[in-house]
Length: 162
Length: 125
Image (cartoon, rainbow over all chains, first blue to last red; front, side, top):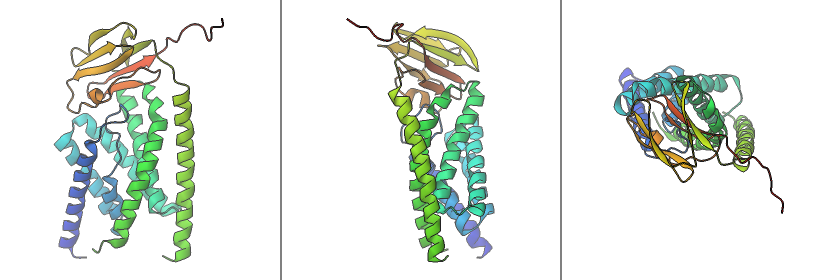
């Protein structure tokens, strides 16, 4: 793949991630923790992880975090979103390389880990762990959302011609 | 990737998803079935409990040097206004059960429902 093509592909993926993030921000929060969401932007990250490799995927993920915070969020939300994205990416990469999980399984694990990391960071920022009460609800929504994201990613991975 | 390999992956995916869903459903059911109405809300600002308000007394309170406004009405509490850019805390709506909370992350404020069930477990007669 030529450098230009790779550059434009990654740029499109970043835009995709941002638009997906914006779309899901329009859905009201189920749980009182800011940033807890479906993780639709991970569709772009997982697509890249399987098609172009770990490095492009992590770059797009990092860019998404920074740009999203600059466009729609605050410095606090960036730390918080970065923690979730980082932890979930590390887990997804490990699971992809070391376990016999498929795209959907990796995506579910990534989504759940993203939520867990966010609760953990939010607890530290707030100085209290009372919000752990919401972990079961996040586990439920995270798993279901992860399945959806995983299926969408799998479809793209299979069908998109680069 | 061979068909057998793909099937194996799908199987593992199914195992993981089923396990997670089971864990999630069981824990959610436990939380929902055992929930009871709270007696007070505790306001935690930057990790420090700064106020406790009774849920059976209606009122409007200013939190964290005016960055948030909490309203208590009909045994429930909700955030009426906040200075944060995202407004998630306002979107949450009313909380009234023990363990529920409203969080304003940018302002580092957490309002949680606690305690206060009646003293008796049952009344006979």
